[in-house]
Length: 171
Image 1 (cartoon, helix red, strand yellow):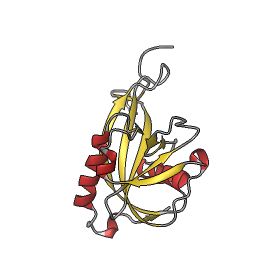
Image 2: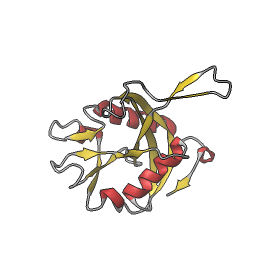
Image 3: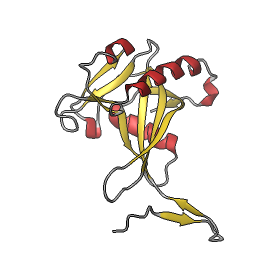
């Protein structure tokens, strides 16, 4: 296997574009400015917590994939997309040299959380920033980056009052 990153070219063949797998992370924040985290007995047998996470599928936009992952992992809740919190690249494995991680902020607007699909049997909990700053909270997604969740709260405060026309989505 080559260590070169896959690429595609434009129609003229004059420009090469990198092709990267995309990891999607949905950070869901409620009106009390708490973040929803899940703890899966199969994904995280050590009791670690994580945001909704998954991968972009072929033919999806980032928003479509983020909403799909939220629906699959949280059930039939209502959220409103607010925007991107952070984007980074990381090494996934020997076949996926470069992966793009996109953290997307969703405002919780109601509905019962019911972990499903690959998060079935998971615990869930709404965490305040003060609770997240407790050293005993083991968060695996985002790995070692609690600042992303802090940024999510800051952006929630800025964006929550934006007009609903930005996009109200029922999952």
